[in-house]
Amino acid sequence: MLFREGDKMRYCPLVEQGELQAFRHTYKGDDKVFEQFVRGEWVALAAVFMEHGSFPMNIRALSAGQAILIPRETLHQFCLQRPTLALQLLGNLSQKLYSTINQIDWLTSSSAGERLADYLLRLHRSQQDTQPNAQVRLPLNRGQLGIRAETLSRMMTEWLRQGYITCRASYITLCNLDYLRALAAQAQRPL
Image (spheres, rainbow, N blue to C red):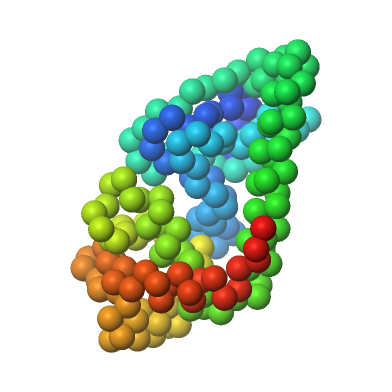
């Protein structure tokens, strides 16, 4: 665990390599994942400008990597001295907010199959550097999908039978990317 929810935010990480994840513990003891950060992304940037100055979620590394730790106060000073930087950071935050709104809309209006296809394609995009072909490594926590275990099992069995995917241990090979893209796109909102 790199940072815990409520820790004072002295630094804002900017990911150089690897992958970080923001999550909270639920009352039932599970982890609820909110976001994953890859190269070039700021981690918890909004918290830099919040009055409480604390991490709003737990942050952990999903893989070995590096991040630049920029002091929170330095970011404040840069924004005051360089309005262009402030506007870029504001644009970044606005894009994150827009993406979050679209994701909520997507989760509440899409089918389980559309969500699973989208999830597998996002994993594929984020793991292209580490996994050959169209193979993805499933993370330990699959609760992000909002799909009951029985429904997920039925869909995976059907997709295996249809030849859309193959499975081996915690790896899934996406055999029909066109089908998965078409399915995931059905409930997507264009920009």
